[in-house]
Amino acid sequence: MTNCNFPWRPPLAKDWAERLTEIEATLAEERAPDYSTVKTLANQQLGRREQLLVERLAKKLKKAALIDDAFAPMTIGLLGNRTLSYLPDPLAAAGLARGLSISSVEAPYDSVASFAFSPANCFAQSLDAVLVVLNESALASKRPLLDVSAEKEALADAEELFVALASAAKQKTGCPAIFATLPAALQVSSAELATPGSSARFRQRINLLLAEGAIEGKWLLWDQAALASRVGLENWLDPVRYHAAKIPFSLEMCPLAADNIASILAAMKGKSARGLILDLDNTLWGGVIGDDGLAGIKLGQNSPEGEAFVAFQNFVLGLRERGVVLAVCSKNTDEIAREPFREHSEMVIKEDHIAVFQANWSDKATNIKSIAETLSLGLESFVFIDDNAAERERVRQELPLVSTIEVGEDPSFYIERIAQSGQFDHLPLNTEDISRAESYGGRAAAAEIRAKIGNYDDYLTTLEMRMTISPFDDVGRARITQLINKSNQFNLTTRRYGEEDVRAIENDPDQLGWQVRLDDKFAQHGMIGVVIVRQDSKEWMIDTWLQSCRVLERGVEQRVMDSLFEEAAKAGVENIVAQYIPTDRNKMVSSFYSDMGFNVDSENDDGSVDYSCSVQDYEPHRTFIDVSLEK
Image (tube, rainbow, N blue to C red; front, side, top):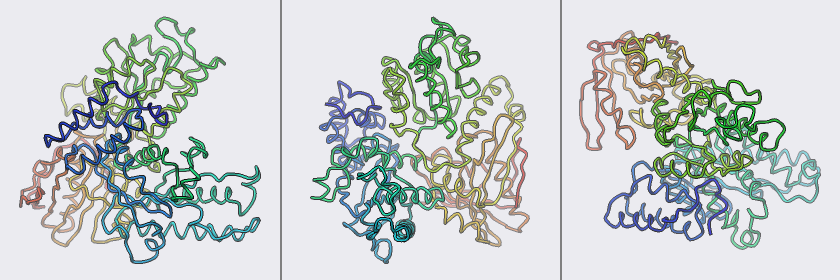
């Protein structure tokens, strides 16, 4: 029996057991199993037995230290006033399905207060996040009904605890806190929310308080309340186990809770999807445009099916507003496929919303690979939506890294399946996130021009690129922090800093923090680079150099480096030193400093390389970018 809590996952494969046996045989040979094979095995509609087997596999992979480098490692602290010891195994399994290798460290039971308010550290190690799951009893003393002042005092006490826990997480473990919202209370009356002091009202206000803190960058959220509401409180909470063992949600819900949490962790690691690839016929509208014609397809028109497609299109545009790039992959004649976008009055998605439009008679796997290449994104960055089960299965077989969601054939369920999948989970949004879809669209347009212009210098000139380099500031702080903690490939040291660290750099006269933005005639790419430099009178040291892969091969890094050496020369600096610290994901920049003209000073035992370059001897690069350096 498969798990109906994961309807967006593909059905359990007939050869699932055989694939597991093959993976375990690979482990027995002391070899790391293939990343996509393990991820695919975990990301299916698992039954209870299969769930336990994946949990066991995750343990074996860690014990043997034979997990593929593509799995991003994360160590999570579990802290609460209820029992969380049932979460680590499901979390490890959920991590495999999302490309993560999750290890959990559980704090001693009910050590919340000591962690928040005393020097004691119940974790005693660095972590990637501390998940804090509290129930109402940890947040409030008795609140008499209708006593508004007592309710306000309880909320203030709760906020003080949240702030203390978030601060302790940062100071003691070097990571953010993730707070779980509180599930809704069982209501005695429909007037509960209008009754000061009631549990229902208090929990709702606590959740709003947590949301405001997340907006301000104080902590992150796991919306346990939304998940409990989705499955129903009677399914979420097991009263018998709650009172017997203080388990905050039923054991049957642990895999679902773990997957929900893992989607947040994936967002923290930059593993969320960035692109949505859409089929057309019976996916964006009902019917086949080539057979039924413009007047024959079902879209709006006050029909249930047509209205479902309109609702889905509105949902898709909502994703685009969050920075998700849209692409079309359809077996169709191109001109015919574009007709609804251009001429149908109830078509919500327009042609200019689509960054790459692939409508032809090639197989969809080939077209998806072409879309990925055009947008310079990895296959793992995409979600594919198609009503046709055979097409979904073929893409899964040929492109297992693409997340092909099991949307079914009824458009009424498309939104639910995609939203519940967590593939587009994200941290609190900023303006840079929102502009990302436009940026990718501009990249596609630039790629089209590049194909037409043979000379690369002429192509770069045609882009009319404009760069702005400015110091760290309040406005950019959230995006700066996001880039520092999400960028892996074009990141020379992969050092991670939080918002308070970034704020400290802003106010430190001995540190230089640059945020780099780029525009061209096709798009505003927003903030695409971060540089942090430790400054001494005669020598500067590059601590952090990272860049978005959206703007590779445009001369961006060369122009930023030129600007850095220009400023160093003005300050009388004699030398700039730097370091490359290798990881499993930043090999693409292993020769970055050598390519920039730096000399190798030492190659260290840990694989890192130290570089230096004389300011006097540095030779500027030829670039095609107008730059504005703000101070």
